[in-house]
Length: 447
Image (cartoon, rainbow, N blue to C red; front, side, top):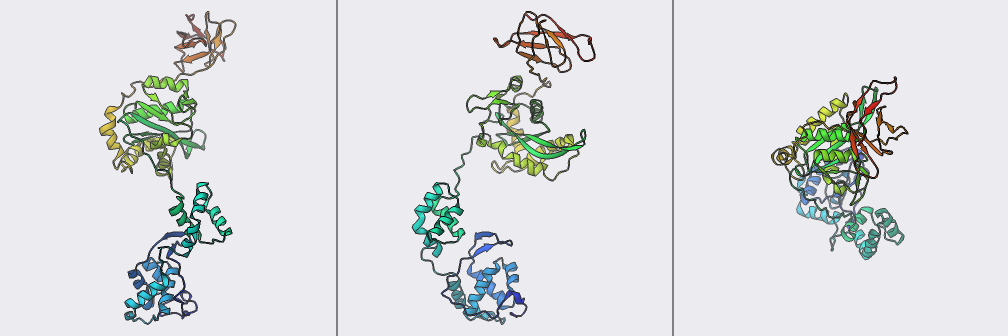
């Protein structure tokens, strides 16, 4: 049994055998409850005295661990060294004089002339070799193996600290902040997968994506949820964003999403006709980010996991409509009123004061999204449209593009010829259906 009040398993082989004060004790490397190595923590003389005082009073090692925050293995080393120096667990605290504490410190913390232990000193002659391996992008585990083959067997943690200090291991490139620009000038846009939401129409849970907008100057966010990543869904999200912000930003920096970008290029990207025409209608310019270059849109890039974890995770939404209502509220109250880590300001307040007055006017009318089929002109100079109607092509022998400005009623048709950019427009009207499967569209002859 150990001292009074102690558990016997805390003190196997009590009393402990004499300790050789010349043993090179390891530094105090703290370990977590699961055995994971934590950071090095220096234990002060006051803490050593407190550990020994509790032990003299009969407290067990586990209890000292809990009450002082010093790891149990470290506590055992101090106690063993103190017992070897003559300390007895009899409740007499007068034993804890400066001489005894000094002997314990000498035993547990051996003298290090250069500030490092023997393992570090063994690595010093191989500093250039380690630096070369790090520059060759070898992992630290591999470097540890190669050193062991050369007879340099050191703890991995010591090698890690040595590589960081001497070889620049693990150091990232310096972060260069991109200028925020003028208020109301730029908004960055990106898609992010959120999770599953029940769809009452199908009775199943469907994947939901978030189209996230981040104002570069104020960091004010808007989130639009959708089941699709189509041109229609993207434009619907942009319309909802302009309504949320109360205006239109002058420059949009989107990711290389297929509804916007046809061909990605660092200097000359090609955009889809539908979104390019939409940008012309709303008056903003498109400046797409480069492929696999998240630093081109850093403001919104970091918001994707933030939206997923802070807004979507752990929530139970009835359907997509309810999730969208709560997303708008979250953007205004939670994300908008938080203290941003970089600006140290509330994004919603900065937006209302500085950015909102600088935006372009909000759209007054909803956008009528056109379609872009490639119809075939038949011998009778008519072409079949996606609305199961026929448009008379007149004297034109070949067409390439057909654009509808109306969805349910083909009130305007624009015809494009390959050799010219825009040819003519024809006004057409519905006629009575000729059969149950087709309706004809009669139009004026194209000019």
